[in-house]
Amino acid sequence: MSHSAKPDERFHQRIAAALTEKINSGELPDGARLPSERELAAAFGASRNTVRNALLSLQAAGLIAVPPKSRARVTQLNNPAFLKQLSGAAQTLLARPNGMADFWEARVLFECGLARYAAQHASQKELDRLIAQFRRGCADRNSDLERWRACSRRLYDLLIAPISRDLPKGQPLLVELDAELSSIPFAALLDPEGRYFGETQTLSDFPGTAYLRRLREPGTLASSDTAVAVGEPAIASEFASAFSALPEAADEARAVACRFQNATLLTGAEATRQNLERKLTSVIVFHFAGHSVANADRVSLLLAPGDGKESKRESSSVLNALDVKTDLLKRCSLAVFSACSSSGLEGDGAADPESLVRVFLDAGVPWVIASGWDVDSHATARFMNALYRRLLAGDRAPAAMRDAAREVRRQPETAHPYYWAAFRLYGRT
Image (cartoon, rainbow, N blue to C red; front, side, top):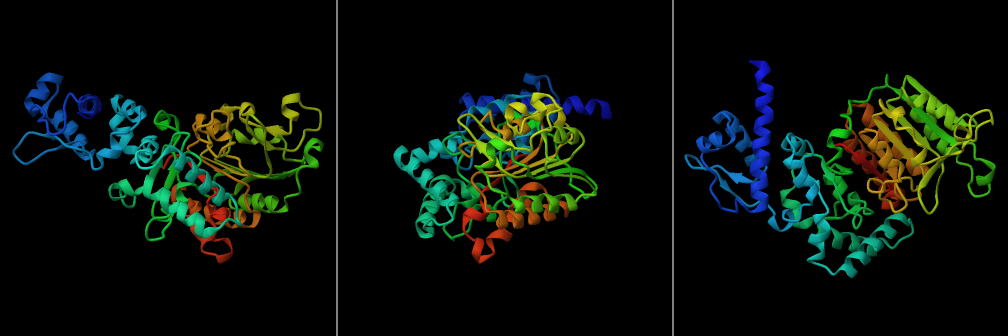
């Protein structure tokens, strides 16, 4: 009996996906009655119990209403003006055999429809101006806070307010954005009560629905996990004049390593690519604290140069997306890039195929944390201390990120979003 339950379970998901496609295409318009359970069972060659489970899935998704003693009827979603703009990615997801289950695993997807919805209520010129002003204000510790707050509120009104009533309470949200909005740290948007969106919601930037199967399910981090922490690698001579010493980065890496019983600390001349790759194959946690450099193509992490005995590749002091051996990351659950602007050239780590964030996600790493602008070392140390404390207490990464930002924000001297909103989480909830 237990053996036959699995195909039946998959079957009800396929039925739900087929009916969803009919609803999305308009073949079953708003208000239309669905065929009876008996008719649906005959049409799909399924049991009535299987059909009933499919209808329950559609009801949970808000696509149909099932009145007592009456046939199911197609209903509008809670916010049709927004949800009609859902991108093809969600439609594709729901059409897959396990699409409904994967969709509910994702909880909520903010998709590129946000940009189109906002465009209906503001000119493209105004939207571009607001995004640029908001991001500049976040990344500049000396920005005019009152002016920035007004910009933050306006963006909240355009992007979040129309769907705020429909957001589930106490559930993590996946934020999937197109290039137009991807540089926005959504956690720093202000609601009408003056609360940050990242204070009331736990957020993850999501690379796309195709990654639901690719990203591994992260387990709870434990102090017994293996980790490698890289801090303040020795700078190669060609970069020495452009970058100053980062003693705080070495302290940060040391503090991270101290939290794990099976940790390797690589600092100074030991922080070479060869030494790092030797350790990556077995680690659950990879933490980098140091300098990054951006050129016209990509962001790279600066490592210590090799001693000349390795190959040219292994002795390179620069690690970028093209250099990462993804087969080394099969066990990694968390990667943290605590470096200046390490997410991507435009702060869009999940969308840029050349970014380190994207490469680690491609390798299945479920949680990747990276910064969107140059970060303050002291505030970063406080943020990371709070982050790992919460992770090792059993929190998942979105909740740990929320609490770490709150702890930094609570201090008057680091209340500005420059200090706490730079780091963004990419991947799973």
